[in-house]
Length: 552
Image (cartoon, rainbow, N blue to C red; front, side, top):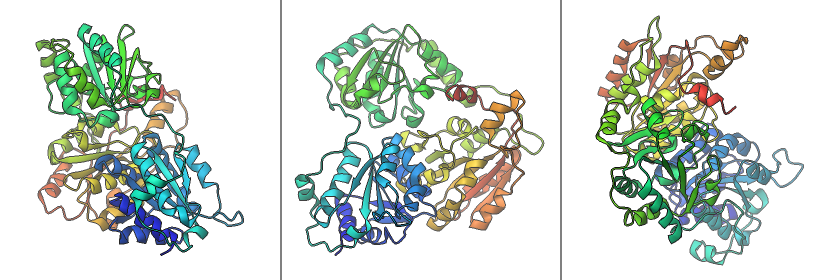
């Protein structure tokens, strides 16, 4: 056995179940060792796609993601996806061959690249530490919720390995210093902090809970506490669906919020953020938090307490445990939960309930009409993945999801082009649900190589392209000021024909009647993925775009 094989076998022994990547000479042996250890390997067509697939898989499966890449260009190709994962604190391990000879064409400072984008850089420096380093990379990824680059120098990879693949002994005996990273607080909060939050909840007349990524495991505990405190429930975009089915669910807070949700959140006298940093997107640059409201943040990472909207009280601890401890201390009270508010949430609580003038016509479909039509046609058990762009609010808010496991939102870095790969990773994590990829035309063309991956894997995916023949965000941001738009607009392209060339079924939608083609696919065998080429109206920007550009 050589070192590369030992590393792959060690990670398989740690519990890795699925890996993604593009194989070259520098990661050939470690990838085959993963497979020999029982790990499923999913070959992507581009390393950027592989990294995002692994990111989405980790988010939706609850297991560590692994991506395997070639040295040098394999890593640089993956860098945008790795940046998204690092910013999102996704538990992810990147296995990369490393050329340490400075005269090699492949030589770059890979550790510096990882550090620059917020990942943790580690290296297997000798055969003796191969297994311990692999085990430590796994531990850091899982326990510290970090994206870890494990560099595998080519000469070390090829060296003989004579040790044991006993990862429990290796992890316990590792002399590796844990990498520096954001501090993670205790799972159980201090009693004084819990007591103070209980006092604030007891005094609040209009409390609102906003749950984020760190609360996706705590629906039961948060709903029970909210019921006692009389709190309304909302989420950040990444936790969309967490409270689906509750009569007090306001859906997403922030730029995507309905007019009713924005009104009620602004009316709160206490905002409690659960595993949510309350960034500018979740609070509309702070405007959703009333100047007179108290703000509390419950988070494992104390750094969140002073980020974005500073907290009047920070409670360090696991969301579920803190909520459970509070439920025993908070006496039941109506709070914000009046019959009038309940009636308004029923009548106005979703974007599809907000009246609008349908602008479909001339061979183009209003993106609201398109999204509502898809929501009605597609099976409820779905998992929706969203790319970035002017279009993104429409599928995010008009296409519903059954729960927090139905929405995958890789938007911490806000790169376009990640949506299709996101949907692939999510689909592999949740094969029990229909995967739906929502893309703009710009992002679709950036990630189009992975159409072949969707077909090859036999995924019954619906890929919806909102095509305005432009980078729409730039058109609507700069166009009103009279700037030339030739650099951000494009001639028509037949995306349906391109999809058919890859082996997909496809339908072009230029009006509501064309959605019948989607219905036919849903009612059929679904033996091929479906691409919906939607020619959408483009007269004005999406409702959230103006808010979004305030952050630029």
